Length: 283
Length: 327
Image (cartoon, rainbow over all chains, first blue to last red):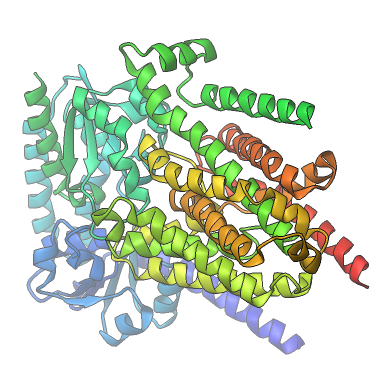
């Protein structure tokens, strides 16, 4: 019994050390660029597909191939699909695994215990974060030149799109009344396109629900809703609520394909461009 | 009897007004009611008529359904533990509703949703009557209820997990605990006809249930047609519970708490308990729905959570009392 306790404590200690070691060396530039990269997170999937050298990226996650979540579903078909499970990732024999900071800690811990190098990317919460993630992905993959070119294109396109105009306000309204307030990528996208974010004005920080009543009272100039997903759900029923229908009759409504908004990749500029077009239509 | 009816009606009316006045939009009670009645421009009439009014109406409708169904089941089974949620009727109704939604039937035919929930609830009631019957003891009733609830909950979860829609699986808690958030007048019109029919059917059972208190033989000697009473009970309960669950999920314990509190006030006569429980149930669900909006306004706290916190201790107490009575 005591041996058991001691053993488990030793495992925990070893794990902690391994984790600390892993984080410390995660960003250190490897001597050689990784040759077999596996990504298990939707956002790292897309950044890696954009930046990896031919043959460098071996596998992306199943979400990357799902057109409802991924802005690059077609590109993802060229890769092997994984389901972010430690066993299958290990069998792909990667020398680098790309994960998100919210990837299942059990999976990430297991991969590190198996001796794999795992680099975790934090969620991008702004356009500036997005530049940073592109540059970091390029560094991790040893593709600095490609990364610098992509960041330069990103900056140029953003500068062309960005507007100082904030005479209009817009609200994002997703199933279950979910919206995105201050400190989110969506908020930054809205503001780059020249909209005031209603959820931010109502005091929402991060993601959360906005009561339908408050949305109706705020009467935004533009209401952005997600497209319905396949199959039925009660969560999406609020999107057909008569009060929301009455609201869209008065304000401009926009249905978006959400994949562009989900990840900090250059695709968010497609979202900005859609919004700029919508704003110009309001004037 | 009359003072009780008056005070319950007054309580329900006051709670309806409170329900209409509570909400995150910050509309004053007087302005809100004026906008509700008189209409006008601006967003206030929209909020009052399309968001708050259906919520208050559904609170009344679902509460009275659950109270009435609970009182009727308890009268027929002569057991204070019979409650639509506890004995699996609400759970079976939820299974019917989920099947209708996720097979696409509900989208194709408007009435498919409440009718499927009614069918589910009807099967649940029939199973309970078969397994526990009028002569079965409390233990049989509760065990049968647990089995039916567990099976219905498992199948509901299975259907939701199999759905291609990513939101479906997270809705398991809605179907188990119930909520009135973001419902519209569409849901009111969907549930109302079945609830009215079921309510009228159950209210006719008063005299029969009174006679049953003397025992089945005595009741039949007095001219009671037991088979017909049972059929009316099954159909009435299934219609009321099914329609409610179809639009607001399964809300438990209302049909247990309300008849229990009101039974001493009506002289323990089932016929009087029926309408009193309908009024009391409306008051309880309205109060619970006001509370979820005041306690955690942003989180859509489920109604069933509150009713269970109130109802489960009472349920334990009743089991304890019943056990002592049987020993």
